Image 1 (spheres, rainbow, N blue to C red):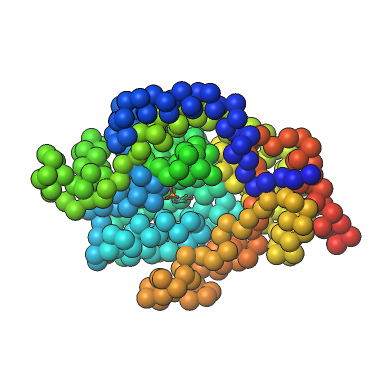
Image 2: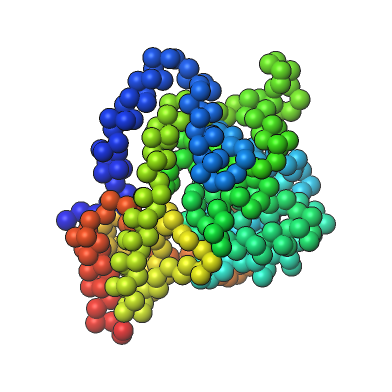
Length: 371
Ligand SMILES: *Cc1c(COP(=O)(O)O)cnc(C)c1O
């Protein structure tokens, strides 16, 4: 048997007739840049998340870069964020000339630890950028309370968390701006790159719309130096078809997680994901904290099962951020977590037989070892 980390073929097959029709329409209209499908998707996602304005752009990375710029954050400013995330979280701050200030994570949820945020606030701090890692929303009530107390902006990096909630409220809807990624491996994935900013603030929405077209308004008059970063009409057309299935896919991922949770409970060397009682996760990843991680990874791969380490090196230790002056030991929870995590297949189309095959591989690896 073979179990890939993600099986896009299984996802696309039943949708292909609708996707083809949607793409044919774009090709018959030739409105490749900012066609009506982009606006329609923006309205549909805004309604889905219960947020007033949505602004499509070229990637999840660009959505973060645009969000930081729209909030006027730049040289001399600091933004508090997590070191245990995809690189783009911190690079978006850096690209705007500001500095990421890394705060350690909660060992259970892997998300930014709200207890450690206030100690990291300096006179230069302008914003907090939490990440809803692996599909679990951060404790946004506490983060918003801290932000309000210190007059800080909040950008939610929701690249991995579309549809996740905290106390019933959608991720992306707490902060000043929330961002999405439509990279193909995200829960709502395009057939290429894509991203989006969401906000309830009409002025910020207008600024984001202007910044994605070189900062121009009217045409050829530039108030800011923006990006060329639109969501392709083609991608919007594909995403419109897929959005109708997102809730069911997330439900299927949760059912898969429940399957693994139940069976893996007996294996004490592999800790299953902790989801806070206030949170509903969409399981962009199902991530174990395990003993002897690298050997387990080899063992699983030898059985033709896909798995991955998200993330092997926390961002405060990356070469490109050396001038920030962090060293090994500064953020011990993130460092230890990066040595122990392993993500296993969780995609919605997994069959019962595949799930059992994955579980068996993990059980066999630890069998005979002290349990
Ligand atoms: C995927 C991802 C991004 C970047 O999205 P792209 O669309 O690949 O540019 C940003 N932040 C996090 C946490 C991500 O997982």
